Image 1: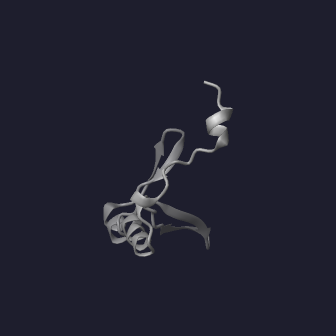
Image 2: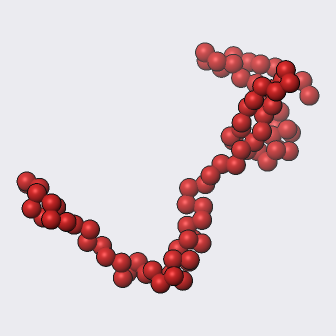
Image 3: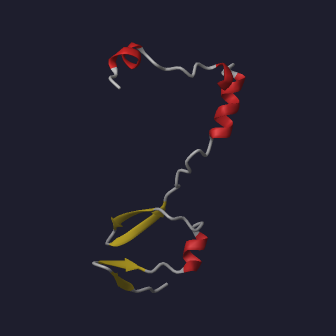
Length: 85
């Protein structure tokens, strides 16, 4: 499939047709490499923040960790005496 390089600000960009992006899963991050005299582009998996939190919380609960029983006072002697207000 033929495409064109276009000027984008001080850079240049390659237009990737929607049909090709959709076949790759419409990813937003890619790895680019020069390979055999051409440009090789591979989609990357984007890490989703907090993706596994629900699973991790469930595992923590199974291991006996309960937020309501965890200490919420992390102060130390410096916090109590060292700060000047």
